[in-house]
Image (tube, rainbow, N blue to C red; front, side, top):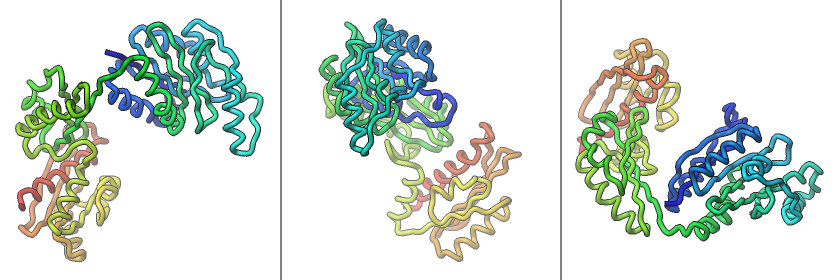
Length: 375
């Protein structure tokens, strides 16, 4: 099976100044092509460290993809690092320089002298056209490896990846399998209890089944490797049906579904309206649900009072409220529906800073299960 590793280059990523979105995008692209991703790593703008990382990746994987470090400044080290890792010098390429000049000319400007750095690549590299940016990209081939250097700007990276890199990889490595993934979202049971119910499925070889715990939500990932999308879909469908049968209403959605989206759809489908109140959640529920008010310092008693007032003034069918008590690591939830009022007190054993999100998700899931019971 063809394997790959991704190296993200940039000190600004290590310092937390920008968020790396390229790794996720490339990983999902490789997955869809049936390529096994072994490792991802972020390296600062240091030639020696990048070269060491590339050499190590080449020993483990067939494909090494880097992003970033292809700009015109001195601290853009990828070209030199790849050359060093391969054991060659860099060379000036007139065809790549013409690309740079052509791109900059579209903005009515002429390239500066330092931008000539972008036309230097490891000797013998395959140049890749970058029509949406000034950084030419390249591939260095060895008998086993393809070392591919892409821009760090996401829009540029994505364009070159789809236009040049994917066709190259399909041809070079004869990629004729796909990996497809289905993610089921669960709420109402912890990761350990879900694991107990589907543990035997987690030992399957193909499809594979795995768990990922979030704050108040657990994902069940089903990944199938097959020759075609239809075959992968069929393999996933069988396992998904088994998971859903075992977990029942614990599964609230799949793939791009969100807990708040599912709840809002359920309310709309019943022809109802919702008003909500949060206290101490730093606007988390306000940003997720419309018609939500944020009130300070609500106690268990004043939460229900505020909820009654909000429901009366809005004429909403349903009212949901949640307030947290950080010192106690606890939360109080309240709900008013056409069937009456109810409250629920919950305690939390996780990191204190996760209490707001955990409380919000449990409150939304409480509303979801209540709505299901109203059918």
